[in-house]
Image (cartoon, rainbow over all chains, first blue to last red; front, side, top):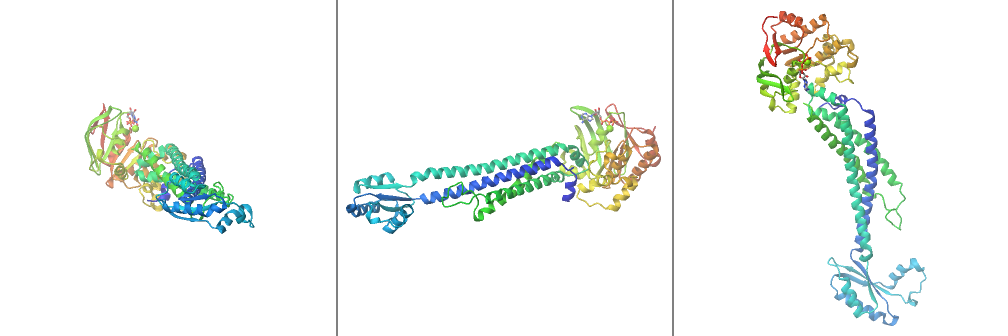
Length: 289
Length: 223
Ligand SMILES: Nc1ncnc2c1ncn2[C@@H]1O[C@H](COP(=O)(O)OP(=O)(O)OP(=O)(O)O)[C@@H](O)[C@H]1O
Ligand SMILES: [Mg+2]
């Protein structure tokens, strides 16, 4: 079928054309941010849940002369606790590395009554934190289990919720765009009933007539969304870079292959526009013999 | 081509014409007359399946009209040229593009030479690039005729094709239609113009269908 010919049979519509273009661009711009949000929170949630996946610390406070026996008791308890994959006491140099950022390089570790730390990694089955603490209290008083999960779990939950909201926003933006293009297409179809009637009378098949409108609106949806996506990506690229403080706001953006994701937005917009216009056209044509 | 058996048509439950039985065979030439509002336009609409019969059996190109789907209907309309009473053009396209439109919508290519010849044939060569709203009533009807024959259809239906034409132009248009009929096309012309009918009878064996009292009758030779 001659595509250019079918494009000519519908009179040009200046205003709705521009409106569709601009709205598609705005929607795509928003979609880029929703996508960036989803991806960033996805990264964050994964990082946090990996990190807290199953690492915990036992902190031992004791008078210096009893420290070694306490440590032995703790190691013994840990060795007998189910659900622990590995555990090991941090040595002095590791402690040094941990404390240096806070207290400077020349810290006389020996002279300070520092707690000893034992890092443990849980197996998939996980530990019974409460039970372990009870046993520690009994066998090695002054040993405290720091379960990281406790304070990170709400953060992970928040990140996951954000990710969900990001995806929901994407869906809503897609739906709003479908609705908007349907309205614009319907307006264009209604304005051209006479043209459509005439085309039917001289033997045009539905798909020829629909194609004229579908082409137009798919083109606009695609072009508008491409422009909006480009602007959105530029805006995201110029967001302040994420730094070590690695908060979640500064982490908003795409990384590496993540930059490919927004390129799907115009394609999806085109598909949405195609579907919406096709449906509107077919519905309209049903009323014309 | 078109076969009717006890067919009725009407709007919103009221029969406009009923008990029509008729066969339009290839190469036949019919006039359709009757008072204004009798249903001539409606009859023609039935012929190109814009209206469906409310009763009886109707076959179009050998197919029961009730069993034809939308695409098949479109294909059949490509074989039926219609000069509508109100012409119906796409006002944003030039006369030439409008005349070529049946080819365009059926995906066929337009031959510039043929198109120009056709426009000369209806005397619109110089208006080829004009827009339809810039044409006079008679020019519109001639453009509509050119569009109707563009696809070289099997059936030609013309609704008051001479309504806006002077006698000389009417005769020319009649000659065009007679020429088409001699090429084997089935022609049906709705008209009030008795002079035109008489003139035609001198050239072809035309039959006259008359709608009166909600019936379709074959008029006698008493014109
Ligand atoms: N779409 C419609 N809905 C309802 N009634 C209609 C419709 N079209 C036509 N009619 C009625 O059907 C009757 C026949 O109309 P039609 O146009 O077929 O008459 P006609 O014989 O062509 O008249 P004319 O010589 O004035 O063109 C008229 O009374 C008209 O009011
Ligand atoms: Mg009429």
